[in-house]
Image (tube, rainbow, N blue to C red; front, side):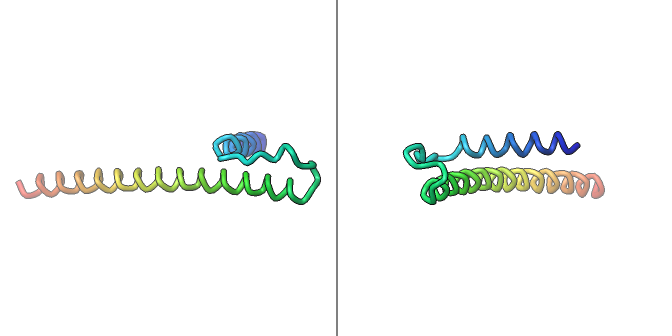
Length: 82
């Protein structure tokens, strides 16, 4: 189970880095303060973008579920009245 969780986390981190608007940090030294700040901003932007997508998707799904539930309740009420 731990292996699956680790694989999922690594996949999500790679996906977040790819889907972000990546700033070019290649001209900086790898252990410099500027490089670390640049990569941190890249990761933060990717995480925020992914979180926004998840939030929007869950809001849409919630609306669909509530609409479906209302239709079912209305159908039940109509059958009870008959």
